[in-house]
Length: 397
Image 1: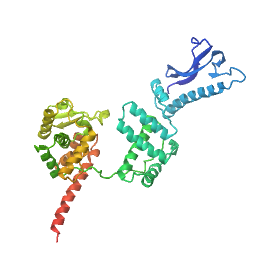
Image 2 (image 1 turned 135 degrees about the horizontal axis):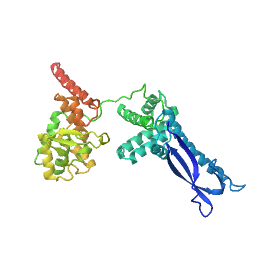
Image 3 (image 1 turned 135 degrees about the vertical axis):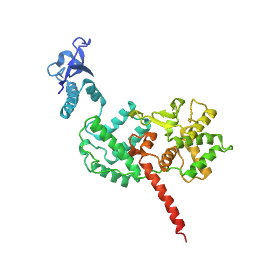
Image 4 (image 1 turned 30 degrees about the vertical axis):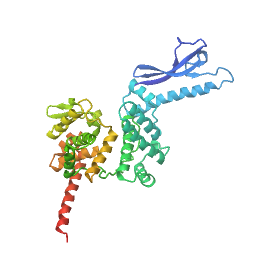
């Protein structure tokens, strides 16, 4: 194992005019040294180099006790990191030590750990603002449930108890609402265990959060055709045309709305749209979508009417969804219409026309086919609905 040590020191060459010196904690990890500024000053002649502690400046001096407590805390913090890595047989470098030391992460109280980790991941660019807010929502739920939830309290019953509490005491009545909070809870349990090497009992070893079909359902083929005809109507309102075009583009490509608003002509690579989705960019997932005649026509219209600099960005994202609701009401479409529905529609129609699940996963930018399996279920439900219509027709009085 790597040799590590931490000791309180000062620089004898930097004695101030009042006779005090700045105290440091000298950390040595695998023969590499770092002096950490503790921002504490003490008279050089009242500091014991051997013990690394302050001595009283006078008989009435009580401050030295507080200073020594601070010094002891800093050494204990360093030694705790040394011990954790040694017990887990995980290699420790000076760089890793400094990251751990300055992280401010609490390894006793889970909720304090989660709060710090959320903001740390956001500051480093690992998660977006929307994800940060979503994760903080789960943090607030957990804090309402158990204000002082510690790592030592976590056990095989924790997840089930949290789920029951959400069902009875909060607005998270639906399976999907609770599933989203469980997903975030697990994310930070995994961060603690796998990234920060905190030992804990897995609360999800016997409990599996359930999820049901989401509220966003794909358009039926006749509804999609209605929108297509409305887009081509010469009397369509200009703003409705712009918004309808963006929505139809998601229906024929399966792009996420966030990617659509970042679209550039650089994404065109031969006969494919070739890009890295923003949501999964940290995994380096690249998507190659075939350029269809329909998508190319919509793209040409966008360039002619808006230009090629900020395609699909007008109007604002909020307004785009508002206008989609207006269009839905005008056409009396039963299915909810929003940009997520466009992506659902692409995937479901692809599967209904005997598309390959693995190919769909590639088109959707999913890292596994498991993420795409819900579209198979949607397809089967729609087939069942069509079969029931035939059954009702044959059994009518």
